[in-house]
Image (tube, rainbow, N blue to C red; front, side, top):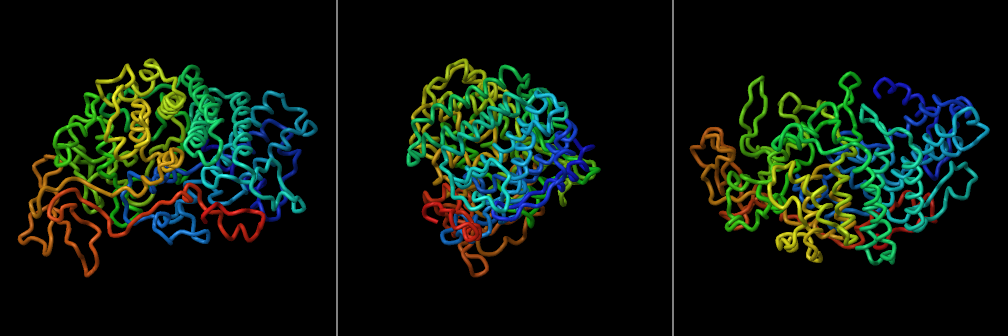
Length: 610
C-alpha cells in the first residue's frame, strides 16, 4: 500500500470533515470522486487513517490487570480523573496512536465515511460503475463506520447514531445520545453488509480490509456485545445476549472454514508464536491484516524503545499473579506445584507453556549487541517485577533508541478468531470436544503443551477463580479466559475484556514481582554464571559485586515511602507502588463524556456517576 501513500494524503485533504458540533468544510467535486472505480478506490484509502498506529497497538494494554508500570494510571487514582481531565489514553500521548484521529469524542472520521456512503449510493453519480464494485466500496465504508462506532460504544456506551453527513443547519448536530441497542444493531447491520459485499477475499500485503477481515471483526464485535449484555445485567439486555454470541461464533466459523488462514507453526514451538510479532513482513499464514512499517517512508514504531528504556514510556512489566497462569508444559496448572509461591525466578520459568519464553526475558534469551549474541536477563534498570516483556521488541540493541522498529504489527490474526469462537461457544453452552481441539487445543499445541489438547477440561482451576473469576464455575470458560489473556497479551484487548466480563476490580490487583528469598545475596536470573541483581535495605553493600544491580527495598527512600518493597519486608515477592492505592467503582465501566463537548451540545447527557 506504500505506493498509494501520497494518494491517501490527497484524498484525505479533499474530503476532510469536522467535529460533530462544528461547521462542515467544502469537499471536492462529487463527480470527480464518485464517477469512477478509481475515484472510489482512492477515497476508500482515507478510511485507513482511522486504524491505530503500530505503537498504538502494542501500547494499548498500558492499563490492564497484568501491567505494573512506572506510575498509577490517573483513571484508577481516586479524584484524579474527571470529565475535564485529559483523555486517559492520552496520559502518555496514546490517544492519537491508539485510536487514530478520533480519540475521545471526535467525529471527523464519521463525517468522512457518511459522505462517502451517501454519494456512493447515489445512482446519478455512480451510473458508470458496476453494481458489485459499488457495493464492495460501500462494504468497506460500512466496515469502517462499524469500527468507529464500536470504539465509541466500548468507551461511552450510549452515543448519537449519525448515518449522514451533517450540514450546519441539521438539528442532528446537537442531538442527544441514542440507546446502545439501537447503535449496536446499526453496527451489526453495517458489518453484515461488509461481510456480504466486500469482494476481496485474499490480499497479499496483509494491509487492506478483505471479506474475511470483516468476518473476523464481526466475531470480535459480537463477542464483546454478547458478553457485555450477559454480564452487565443493569442494561436489561440479557435476553439478546445469546443472539450476539451466536453471531460471533458463526462469523468466526466462517473464517475458520473458508478463509484459508491457519496458526503459524513454521518455526517450531519455541519460536513460532513470537515470530508473528517480530517479522518485518506479516506472517502470511496467520496474520489477516497488519500495520506495516516502511523505513523509506519513516513509518516505524517504538517497541524496543518503550520496553527497554528506563526513562521513556511507562516501563510496562507483567505481574507475578498473571505469570502464574501460564500452564506447565504437561498442561497442568503451575499453581498446583507445591511451593510455587517461593520458587526463584530461574526455576519458576522452566518447563512452562513456551509462550512464556517468547513473551518475557528468561532462561537462555539473548540479544545482539555489536554483532555478538549476549545472554540477557531481565534488566532491573527497567523492570519493577522481573517480568520484562519481549513480545514486540526486536533482539538487536540497535533498535532500542527512538522509533526504529521495522516489525509489522498485527491488527487481525487467526489466533484471535479461534479464541472468539471458543469463548462464544462456551458462553452459549454449546462448546464440544471437537471445538476445544480445533481452537484452544491448537493454540496450546503451538506453545508446546502436550496435555489436555483434545477434550474439554472438567475440573475448575481454583487459582483462576480465587484471583480472577470467582463467579465462573464452567472449567472450559475459565480455561478459555486464561488462554485469551496469555495468547493476546499486549495486543490491546485486555482492558475491554475486563470491561465486558464486568471484572473492573481486577485493575486494582497488587503489582507483585518475583520472589526474593533474602536481602543482599545476589541472584543469577538466567543461570549464565553471572550474578544479576540483589536487594538491600539501608546502605548499598560495600564492596559491591561487579555487574550486579542493587535495588533498595527499604521502607523509605529519600525521606518518602519507598514504592519498591518486599512483601515480608526482608523477603518475599517484590511489590511495586502499594503506596498509591488504585480504586474501582462501577461508573468506570464507561468514560465520562468530556465536559467541553457537553458545553457545546447541551443535549448530551453525562454517564452516571461522572
